Length: 308
Image (cartoon, rainbow, N blue to C red; front, side, top):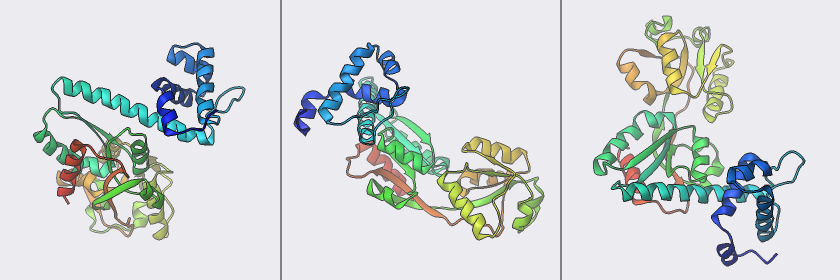
């Protein structure tokens, strides 16, 4: 093996090598990877050896039943995913523009952002570029940053969930994301100006799934109120499930105010005052640090920031 450098990588590494790395990372199996790539297993094995000889280390472990990614290999797999995603988006955008379109924009957003801020901004940018194709993904902030890292989306509207993330992403705040306790109008607690938390805990609750950043914050709020997290719960990430179950059953939920504004205004839901409080955190625009932004993405960001 010669020392790896930028020139040797450019002269030797091909897209088919990156496809092999990404496919093996998904399948963890040489035979399946060969099938997916329509190649023979010996050809795939030879190609992988060439890649690892160039890099100077094993990208995958050779175990009897599978081929997990090595520690250094994880970095290589992430690179392969980014490049292949960029290539895929390049082809899609070029074809759209060739047919007279205005390009492509991929946006990720937390649930509060996809309720009002993102839709309003999409309406405005579509007035400027009617043929702009836009994809919107709704996810939690940690998943959105994974998608940003993989170049699956161009920008996200979310929040940092740990301090380390600020090393990899730029953040421009849009404002706080207040949460509220809500029930439907026929719930017994809806008739009260103030409902004791102990009374609310007698009812079933809708909560975010365990392990998500917002669930961790919610559990902290219950702890500060000196009560346990309700046992009678439905845990979901689906906003449609949240709203449908709230409107049709005597459940209690803690949700972003932006998400329930319209339902409250129309009289379907009622915000309940109680001692349980979840401190509002700022959410904002997240982009990859140190990377240029397309004119379309920058225009959308400007529209978002103008709403502050």
